[in-house]
Amino acid sequence: MRIGGYVPLSLSDYPGQLAAVVFTQGCNWRCPWCHNPALVHPALFTPPIPVETVLARLAARRGRLDALVITGGEPTLHDGLPGFIGRVRDLGYKIKLDTNGSRPAVLRALLERGLLDFVAVDLKAPWDRYPEAAGLPALDTAPLRETLRLLRETRTPHHLRTTLWPGLSDADKPALAEAAAGSPHHYQPFRPPA
Image (cartoon, rainbow, N blue to C red; front, side, top):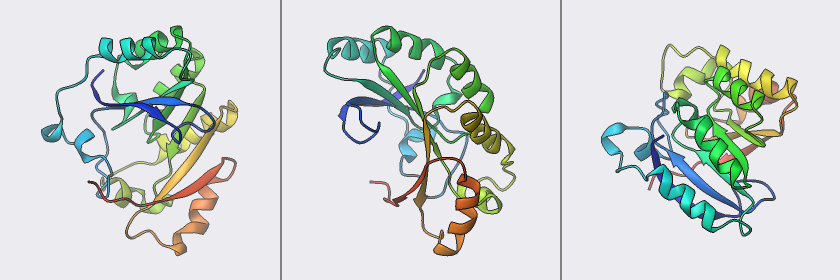
């Protein structure tokens, strides 16, 4: 796993939980309005934080934190994700995964192993505008749709969030509501990268 950032305390990233946050490096999408380009573009990567360093920090904070949020980049790209989550859960932490939803098979495997407590999925645009939103002209939305079906069918605690990126308008909201039907969904403001 390539961990590009660590936040020791967040009061907002996991609803109702005191959480630490780790940011993975690497993403399979190229959203033109990405808030974390330093986690997406390899040329911008900083040296990764060793997994053992993160685990030591979490071990030292047992009893003061409830959970760990794993975000990115796109965490499901990392082969070491299940093992890392297992080790964090052994420390007594709940796990929230933030994902773009592009790898439903990975998500299914994590859920079948009981490794996730909560999942957040970015619902970036109406289906017909997804290639534009993800910066990939040939993007197939079928995997994302499968992710949403999986979360609903398994009744996994989750929510969908849509960032109001430049170019997304009120005219897109009915199609977004249709795509989100059956899942909790909210909008969040766009913040340009620092």
